[in-house]
Length: 486
Image 1 (cartoon, rainbow, N blue to C red):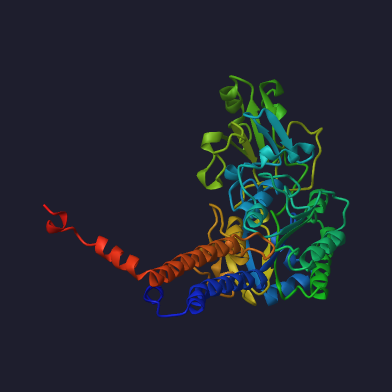
Image 2: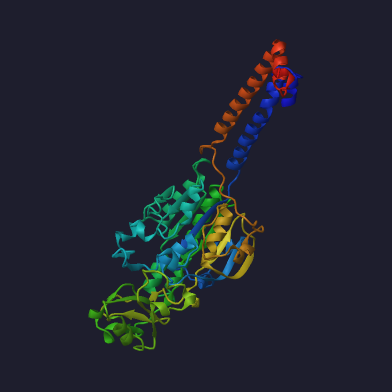
């Protein structure tokens, strides 16, 4: 094309069009790419947790709604959650893919010696972002990639983590009904395309609360479990009414199981060690013990062989497979009760008929996992998985690049309807998001037009001044000696 201009073999308008055509095509393709990626049907995902729903509850009473998801989707028979098997550590592991020692929420009750602060799920200390920022929850990652998220009461979702809250969220309020939470989630998914959420998380306190009060083996738990199935049925019906059930990928899980306790299986620490020697940090069945300064060996010595129904560890002796050593918030001594036993300072404390927090390899501590939607296979049963594997699985479904985590997509890829690709793209930018492409395109256009004008003017000028053109050619030749009259 430049040769055409230099030779004067084409008209100025034709040459101008030849120069601009690639630019116009580039702009068109760029706009088309953005439209195609932003307006395509993005994968949607709703993660639901029924706190304390033990894996075998679904076999205990008729559960038509749970069975419907199992028959139309996938189910995992045995899920190993993270140690310790408590609510806050496991819910944060589900959305980070990290063990508790890594994400820092190591218990429901914690002490951080560096901050000199205590954390309790019963106080407003949970809203201090410093407790949470050793990890990045999935909703933050999605929103930084241009997506939108909605959270209904998920532990930690109403805390500003790394300066960010979910796009839509409900501040935690246990009195808000399950139905209201579902209705809000449906609204968020059903909003106009550029306002709708890509990822939703929904939490419900049952059957955990009833399991603590009644004990999981109580016949009264049957009605509680039936009610959970009915609540799941309500969610499914609302998704169907909104036209979302076949579009949104639905994962139903829980954080841990529950085991039966007995009033004759209580370990009283006051029988073995004075309270003056330590501070009680976390509750049974894994008790965090902070010895007073210089008293670690004395406290450990008094507890180590005190009762055969508990195991006492120094922090550095905690078994490696628990992934529960490498955090400042894990106390110098922890005491783990054996299944069915309760550790108390004395019997004047509150006693529950059901509890969790025990060794995460116990059958009674295992949660449920099932899923339905376009991303999942149908009528497929998998034997086992780890709860930390859920995070890379969700990242794959949502097409967002996962952060470093302790899970593995390869461990759960057989749940998917199609084989995962080696790399996961980021969530595509939305139309409303600012793009530099028009600015770059305009700049290139101006540069190319100005270049054309310079060349065109030069050609016209040279044609009109032939003597100047000839002189220029002469001056471009090397000078000979005779020309210098030497």
